[in-house]
Image (cartoon, rainbow, N blue to C red):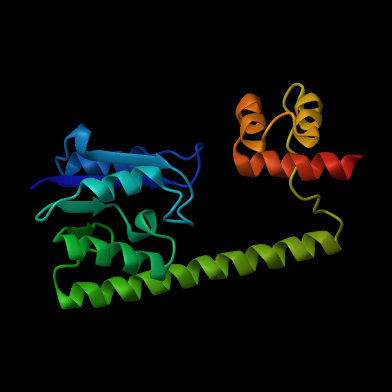
Length: 191
């Protein structure tokens, strides 16, 4: 039976130190700390979490600093915890003081997940309202365009002509798939 600590921040710029301190305070060995810097929007696009989920065995524990670090919406949270429960793995969230081995813990988990999702929805709404006001006042310029990598136009033409696949073009330009297609849309819009 092992205890693991899962750490997640949404971007490369964010700091994991606070969560790492929590792992140390709980005496989790470094090799049992799983850390990733990726959005929690999708449980599919989280390779470190998926790796952790695949190695867990009955009797193991997964500790997180907060449920918001584990899942970004109630549906994903419940799905992940059910997977853990089916494996006989204990889930503990330090901030919310949750232990999913009890019916009360599962109920509280659902409630905290719903409240966290509601707060994220409120934040999105406030952000949209702020952007609308800034646009009215001509103060909003949107995101800055993504700079094109060196020789983007050359590889774009090769991709468009069929000389390179999208996958190879993305690899050569050292881009993420989503960034590549944003640049393609931007490039085609600039023509």
